[in-house]
Image 1: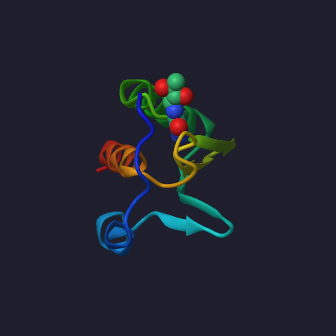
Image 2 (image 1 turned 90 degrees about the horizontal axis):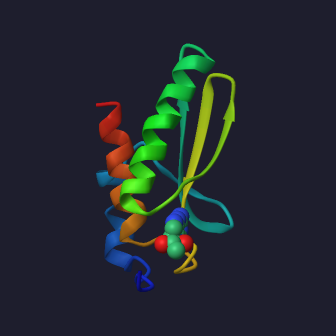
Length: 98
Ligand code: H2B
């Protein structure tokens, strides 16, 4: 895939409205969201669904799981920062829980 452009200032300014649950990451051009579930089994089931989404998007999260908690960070490695691919994947992840 060709290297995607980084988000414009206008696209960045729209982020709090379009992805209110996601926050910027200090020191990295990325967005992150933390999820909490009832237990590990539910967290892992969610991760399995995100993994399938990531494959479909050919775009993969940087993430961490501690028992019932899943932390997801999105950034486009190929572009060295946030691109439309991160926004698309974040929206698709949010839609899993809607
Ligand atoms: N995921 C993320 N987060 N950033 C990328 O730049 C990226 C990816 N690139 N998944 C894709 C895969 C690339 O490495 C493959 C070759 O398409």
